[in-house]
Length: 230
Length: 356
Image 1 (spheres, each protein chain N blue to C red):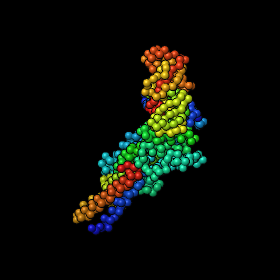
Image 2 (cartoon, chains in turn yellow, blue):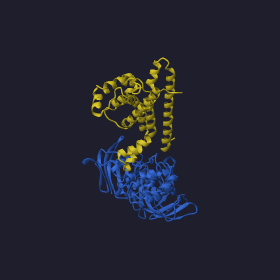
Image 3 (tube, each protein chain N blue to C red):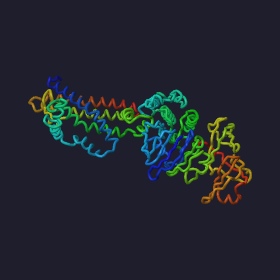
Image 4 (cartoon, each protein chain N blue to C red):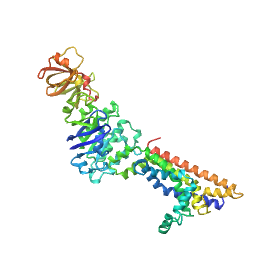
């Protein structure tokens, strides 16, 4: 099994896009999941809805909305480009943004469930021992929710690796810049004689997804042992 | 010194009333659902009362009129929960260390080694909470609370989830805590035996109302079945004089000698026992041919007004107040009246210290 330089590029780019998307959305995901699990506030249903929107909207629509918001001439996109030098449109960063947005609901769902499963009475106990709320979160809530946080991270990563519709709509399919595994497979299938390359990339996509799943399962198992559940 | 004065809705009833206690161990006594845990949660800062004031050793923790509400983590009030609530992801040593991290350096008074020795935790330090027995878990929970150098220790039915064997295992630790560690304790209990044995001050709570607060003999002597799960209960100080070969312990009390099942008591031990009025009979002479072992001379101090067919007779057994719950008919048939000398017949088992 040999890979052409283009295929290698697509694989590495995919890993970079999905990795950056996952790492960047991780803190936000933890925060949003915890807020949804533990807080009551006006507009909670709205936040819940917005978070889940990418899951139910056609990906093309999400991609188009990203283009309207973060495009070079769009209000937010122009602001970020002028003030922070951060450009999304037709760049790999845009692919990462699309992947992050699409993976976010899956990530938050898994994390929210695990936060809800943390016994709030343990958090109260930590408070009576003198721990301020932020310390309770770091020393009790987070470690106890860790298996779910890992699961959410892997789900988000897997979704990011496979994202197609929003990516191709938002940042197109530029080899070396925005051409990720799925869009590369799509391109190969559009090219006469590209089936073999498509098959190779498909196998690699399966292998990466599987490795991620196994790794998360191992980490989650270790975390569960740590907290005394089996 | 603990001062509590609160009003707070709890389910269908309103928790209301006040008490002050100077004692080393204050027991909140009442049946389940009376509002004891809600009251403790208010003292701990886990519940914000609708109206009220909580002062511990001069520190105002809650004063709704002045808008004061110190959050739980700044109160330095330790809490031993009914179910332990140990952190499952930390070892016993980690659980013990937890509170010390958050105690300001100059306030750290807790001596780790002494607490570990006091509670017998030496061999448990490396264990995880799920590997511990119920009694061990509660001991670790007590140690964890103490390690945070609290100014007050709350214990919510720490024995409720344990069987009698485990209770017997923990009770001495709580007594040592009360006598050797200078932290005042508020203990929630619905067990009259526990309260009689441990408390310096008893606070009686029924359906959310704080009905009485005072020395155990006084408060428990005047409870009845409308406010608690027991009738009027005498609290008697006793010293274990000897353990007899047939498994009975001979106790010396101001009221006279008493026998009770030894059950782990040792000679020389000082204990407090509870005698439920329902377990006391009255005879007008020393009875013969009776299975009850304990018969004490007494004088009738007073007779409460009848409630239905029953009536509570207050006896003075050589200066110790003991109540007897008998029928109105017996009161009439024996011609009982204040001042009359009688014999108090106490069923041996009624003295069981872990009762209720």
